[in-house]
Image (cartoon, rainbow, N blue to C red; front, side):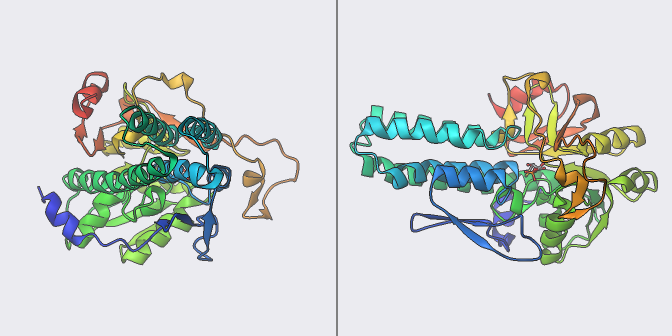
Length: 362
Ligand code: MRU
């Protein structure tokens, strides 16, 4: 296995989707890519929630990191005068940001972590006033970012073991560095690291209607790295697998349950079923912050977005104006189709109910 130190030395981020500098949070507006490179500053939890809703920042880990900084912004923007007021402000900020999008667990994971951290630092007497609390919260938000990058390097290290010279990986959506905020990614980490190590690897990216994360973001991100990528329509997924053009499927995840159910971008389930039928390995790659060990599959809300995303393609009508539309943007893949889950703690094989808590150490 290639060592983590070696991988750390070769990874140089080419994208900076989330920048925290001098108390300002700047986001690369992913809704404008790849046609325009626009950065936006967000200053309050309300503005963070808006950017998440509009998908200017998207992808499970990236929205988690952003919301972590959003908890700092809650304090810097509203300037509470007492520690009690600070906690009230943070509780409210958490509520505002958590409801921005429902499926990715990383969002509430990050806001809970920041809130619990604040309470602990006050209880332990380490934060004696609001300024001290803000300073400690900034450090914690930076830690969420740094831990995410570390997790992705480890996911890449374990995922590399599943890639051979000459392989082509089918993915879905964008689970690269844009989706995680670090410039590396989860599902795309093994491919990128393999490429940096000089291996010949390529990716097939379905366009991922309706928001086109595949054609707009994955293709952009991989081309920027010089990694060969072929764009297909979502409807070509079955054929490329049937024609032996795919060695493995690697996708990210918005939420993974203890029993191995994987919630990810719409279209993932179809890829998993076809891969299973044709004997192609299907891997979901995600950090432990994307795991939800408490919920059952039918309790998870699958986000539905604006019907006009389906009636049009980026504003151009493609259907009669008032046609009834169903626009779920995530789906759920049952565990029987999942070959393994690749996390920073290691590779998790079935039976998931037993092995997920064991490998994650939870
Ligand atoms: O709707 P999006 O673009 O936020 O959906 C993103 C995905 O489904 C990703 O696969 C998932 O968040 C994992 S990102 C590393």
